[in-house]
Image (tube, rainbow, N blue to C red):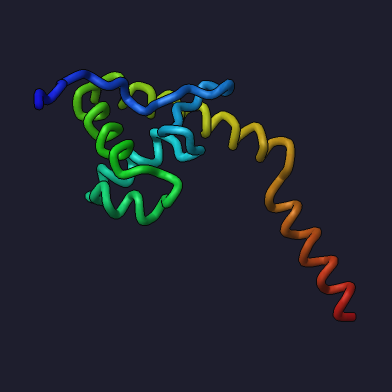
Length: 111
């Protein structure tokens, strides 16, 4: 029997919003890379995110290690987008105002 060695593509797909997801799951590349950089093993990642396959996690980590500069640039871009969305949401929906309204409503109920 001959072992056939073939390169397999990384199990990464970009969704309509431009977010890279692992395999056929909603777990993002951001998530896997972040926990991997914190020292989490592939097995622990699968335990935390049971929709992932162990082989896909290892392949994703390998992709990250082989393309660190590109992935880091992507992660920085995603962080920047998240901060912009957060600022927009905070401008639209003042979190302090919401807290004050909820506390006032709670005080009315208890009075």
